[in-house]
Amino acid sequence: MYSIVDTHVHLMADVHDYWNWNYPHPLAGNHRLDEYAAESHDLSTKSRFTVDGLIWIEADAKYEIDKGLDGVRNPIEECQFVLRYISGTRSGEGTTNAEFIKALVPWAPIPWGYKVQLYVDELKKELGQEFSHVKAFRFLVQDKPSGTIVDSEFIDGLRWMDAHNYAFDWGIDVHNGGLWQFRESLEVFNKVPHLRYIINHLTKPNLELGLDVESTEQFILWKSYMKRIFEATPNSYMKLSGGFSELQGKLTSEEIVDRVYPWFKVTFDLWGVDRTIWASNWPVCAINSGPNLVAKWFTITERIFDKVGVEEDDRQKIYNGNWLKAYR
Image (cartoon, rainbow, N blue to C red; front, top):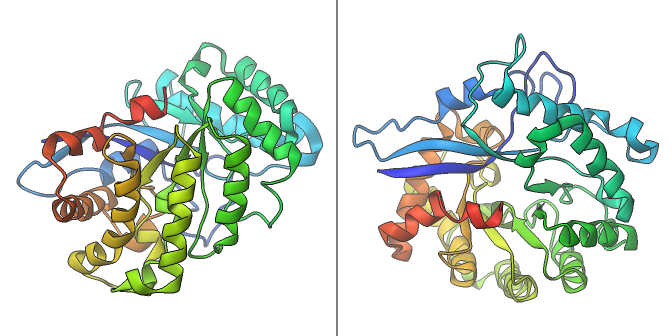
C-alpha cells in the first residue's frame, strides 16, 4: 500500500468571503478539510493507498496589490483560516486535524519586488509560531498579461524568495495561455536560476490534442521548452497533477492515460524519479473528474507509471518522499 502526501490542495469554507469564487462557480461553497477527507479514500477493495497528509496551496484570495498591506488582508486571513485546522477550527470551518497539513504555500505579492519582505514579516507576525509551516509561496502567473513576470520588480521578488530559502510554486498554462508564457518563464529562470521552483501541473499541457501528439508542432515546441526550463532550473521539481482540468467530455481511464502519457514521459525523462511529486489539484480537477478525484487520479497515474516502467520504491518517492526536499 502506498502512502500519499497530496502536494496541491486548496481549502475554502463558505463562512468566509476571502476568495474570488462566487456562486454559481463550482469552486464556490465548502471545500474544507472535511470534504477533502471524504473525497480522498481509495475506492478499490485492494487497499492501494492511504492519504496521510496534504500541502495547502493558496486559492486566489481577493487582493488589491497597489494598496500596500491594507490591500492584502484576504490572503493573510486565508492563511490563518487554514492554520486553524492545526490549532482549532471555528464554526463552519470543519474539523480540526493537527497532523494532516504538512506545509503551507500562501500567496505573496511578488510584484512588490524586495518589498515582499514587508508582507512576509506581517504574515510572520499574524501567524506567530505557526509560521514554521510556511515552506513556499505562490503568485499565480498563468492568468497574468505578458510582461508581468519579466518586470524587474517581479524578478526582484523572486530573488528575495531565493535569498531566504523559500520554494516558489510556478503555474503556467500552455493549453489556455500559450507558449509565450514559456518564453517569459525562461527569461525569469535565467535571471533567478537557483530558486526552488515547484512547476505545477506538468505546465497544463493541451491534452485535447488527442493521441499521436508527438508529431504536432505544439508538442514539439513544448518539448523543446521543457528541456530548456529543466536545464535553467537545477533545483526545480515537477508536479504530476492537473490532468483532469485540461480534459473536456467523458473519457475512459485508458483514454485519459493515453492522453497524459506522452506529456508526462517528457517531464519524467527530464526531472526523473527524484524530482517528480504527486498531487491531485483538489478541488479544481474535481470539477471535471466528478467525485473521488484522488482515487481516480491515483488510478490514472499508476497506469502511467506502468507504461513508463517506474518501480514500486520509486513510486513511493513520488507519492510521499520527494515533497520533503521540495518543501523543506
